[in-house]
Image (cartoon, rainbow, N blue to C red):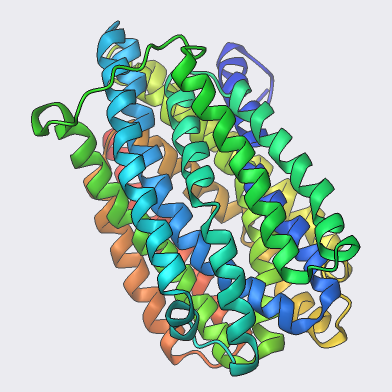
Length: 427
């Protein structure tokens, strides 16, 4: 039977299930914030939507470093080069430190300019800029979490990141209503709750990495070009790929902001649901990064067999998610806002969110397979092409539906080259 559980499935699930718990933490935090902030009114929700788009841009820049690190650490471990993995982990942490300092400085000094660049309505600008400055203080925690995930995934351990991520999500759930309503801090309270939760998670990852609890003893060494050639090459390509993807989603948020306050609020609700759903399947992509990286050089048939299996599971899960969220489409927006106009607009976007899931699933798993195969340059080129096409559609679009049709085109434009490349490299 196609879905009979075998040894390959167990190997996949050992990585994918804990990875989902870890990956879902950030979207869950965002959804919790959306649910609580949505009760403050459409202006607060609109400000949250604008800032979340900017934070995603920073977050996914961090993810580029993480995605470059995972297969490199996995290869070193698979080759028995533990010292090399330890040196790589130390170099990754030093690079992360530089990146996060730059990120904090930019967010704290240029908040109002960034918010205006998004086309934010005047009545929302000050609120959004203040919230962005608060969330900017959480960047060190976010980056520590992201790098911690990468190193643990390279070691084949997705359970530890899952527990840390679930813990920080719980902190956020507890603090949000206290800070927002009990203390009366409103949107700022949501930002402070998120910063506390993410900083706590980041501190735990740093402690585990520096204490040797991962099984690796971090070797601190100033990164040298010879040592870092693989990470620089992978990181540069994945940076371009990730910047193109998140830049496109940021352009989409900006296009929604220019339509009006209710429109950007509704777009934010739909994006948060979409983000949580893709994390369900992206956990399979995380498993693919490790399993393909470990097996492709030493056992290509196993890499091919595991990849095909993960694609099958991806389509199955994507189809199930589509059915479930199609049935919830009319009621789901009401969980996050009580503003009637925002509810109606968000409900109109739920069919896009639900029906795109099978396609999204294929794209995310294929992306993970190609990262595991270290085909970074191709990923960058293909993503830039898809992004340029989508941004052109976003520029000429004049409605929320037009924005979401453009997002569907983005996923189709990613699937076609990824599918072709998969057949040549792995399949």
